[in-house]
Length: 211
Image (cartoon, rainbow, N blue to C red; front, top):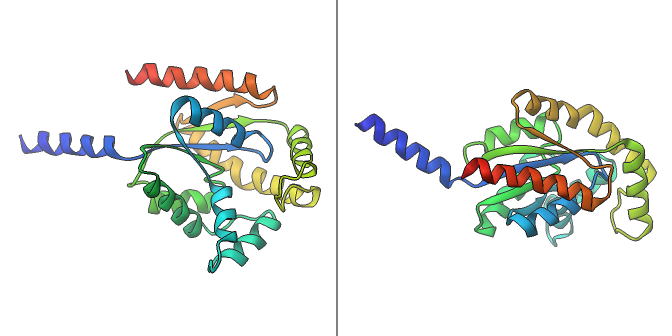
């Protein structure tokens, strides 16, 4: 009897945990665009690790601002403790239960830090992986920069560093989750509307599986 109660309580707590989808892909794969569409269609709160870091960088009096700026400009990854802290605060502040975490985890340190700090505070549903070639992604980022994105890393020099980071650090994370059967792949080389059609099919199938 006690064992059954404990199991039921454990199941109840698990259901109460915020549900998370990690969104990964190369720079310019269209993660932000698709996250905005998913958020509107399915009610997931979009948390961009990059945006959270940029907001923290610009916040007056931030103890991390200068370090974050240097890391972003050099195409490097910010220490996981800082990123996890910002994500956790955003989850708590929102008061919602389902989240898209865009651009995280991006390397082994991110993964280990998340599992150490956040794995017992959230439930990972799956990893949404937008696949797109380097040439297409580069072209998109340079166009975005030329159009006045305001991002200090939308230039060729930073992009080279960001792609090296993506290949060397992020792809192993995708492979890690793929071995666990948690990766959902989406072709991101087509028009955003077509990409979202594939995303909607994925989410609709998820809803059917839950019902």
